[in-house]
Image 1 (cartoon, rainbow, N blue to C red):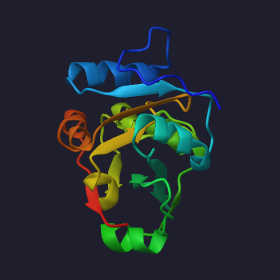
Image 2 (image 1 turned 135 degrees about the vertical axis):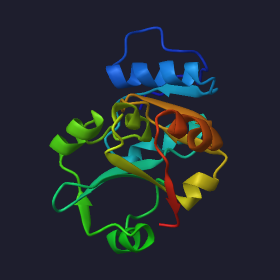
Image 3 (image 1 turned 180 degrees about the vertical axis):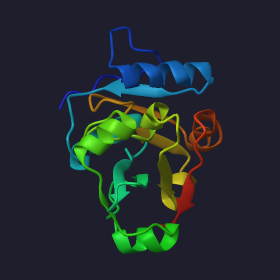
Image 4 (image 1 turned 45 degrees about the horizontal axis):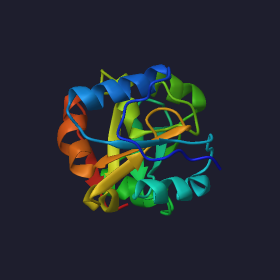
Amino acid sequence: MYISEVTDRLPEDERGPLETKVYETLKKLNIPFVRVDNDAVEAMEECGGIGEKLGAQICKTIVLCNRKKTLFFLVVLPADKHFDTKVFCEKTGAPRVSFASPESMEEKLGIKPGSATVMSVLNDPDRAVQVVIDREVADAPWFACNPGANTSHIRFATDKLLKVFLPHVNHTAIVAAL
């Protein structure tokens, strides 16, 4: 798999709308980051080498909804952690949930399966999606994810995610041991 050298520079080529918005926001908020470009990845198992190169584990992000599709959750977990619906509902007080459909992901966050990222809350100005971050992720010094496309990955300080980025986009994360 191709993985570029690590850089702290903005991409010089044209990127998709969300990825472009992510880089613009990080720059505006003065959040230092490093990034790599890589071959497209569709599964977390493919992200190991990317995480090694960035010096942080790439986080797993899933989008959930309730049966009525009135409540949506963007959940960030360590890459190797199994998602347990029962534990999630107990820890967050959420009703029974299931994976959101590709159509719901596109409508609510402007993303497709395989490129889910916490950065997609940039596309959620109405705060229709609740961010939930696993305690292990919140306690880690570095946070790594894709910036809106599965052909690039970024790493920056986790406290900048929690204390700068999410407040800037009017989202507050529920942090829970999932």
